[in-house]
Image (cartoon, rainbow, N blue to C red; front, side, top):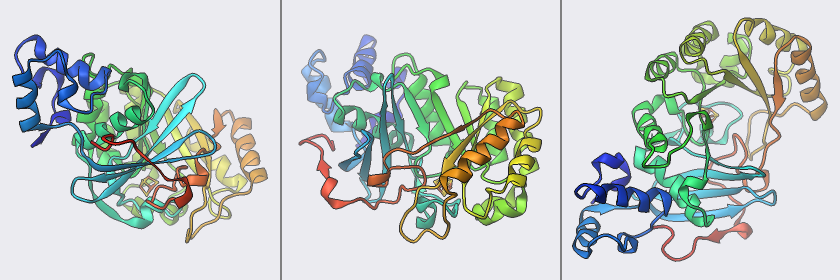
Length: 348
Ligand code: SF4
């Protein structure tokens, strides 16, 4: 059986308006089975069931956090596992999706990086995360209006599959999302950033910089030696010039590594002329982490220094820490008592 989520609405099986009907069942109603698609002829439903599959998961487990976010653990059909996070805010529902099993970037503060690289996810596996979360939350998939590709993996090293999934998210007959509400987060793969600029999908780009100088950055992101900061920022400048989309710079503050005031000043200097917003991320601890987070006072001081120098800066206080769902914590370790398996059939 082939994954039906790999298809654009116009490629779906069936003649004429049947394609739109199937797309509606998939993306507006979040159907779990072809048998639910009751306005399709029985013969077509049966044929769909024989040739296509609706889900990419053998098992879906949900781990609710005290703050309302939920970490999801997906067992893929080949037995590998990946994760996603649902974050309900007052006026928006956001999902953080993975693009890989594990990650090859190996960032020092990230539990996923410590796992190493498993494999790339397909477009269907990326979309399936969103559909499974919507189902578990009792929502139409179209009610999820914000997607960040900040879960496991480096999206720009799996760009073919990521772009396909994003195009289906944007498609008017699929999830009909606004490109401004989709963010791709990268450690800085210049080739991928140039390609993204050429594709001009209007999505947002977040660059995980984490240090203003190459020496420090290499200690935090071991693969950073391949791409000097100057080369990455040149690609980011090109992305901004081409798309007019302001880029967000992510900066995880680590004690004694990248949190000194001189580093804030160097960062501000580096960002001159680049319309960027800095998002400071407090380190979210995990067992065996080789680094320590900057204390709260240091985080506030670093933010203040950047703002004083005219850099728009915010601090992202994390959600879902108690279930290992916060930034940098995704690594398939979850506290047992909070386990809430999905209802029958939800794993599809
Ligand atoms: S922070 Fe992102 S890029 Fe770095 S290791 Fe973790 S998942 Fe990979």
